[in-house]
Image (cartoon, rainbow, N blue to C red):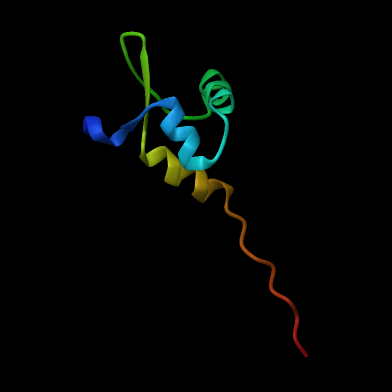
Length: 66
């Protein structure tokens, strides 16, 4: 299980990905990212950053050299 220090606020998560918090809130509403709810508080596991980056990474195209 994640430790408390591994859970990020929406603002911290948005800052790490250089996105607006409203974008992260929309993703939460669409269930695109995993969240942990503690009462009214919403936290996001830091592992979600790596998952999002890995899923969005496209390999570079290789050029044909002669």
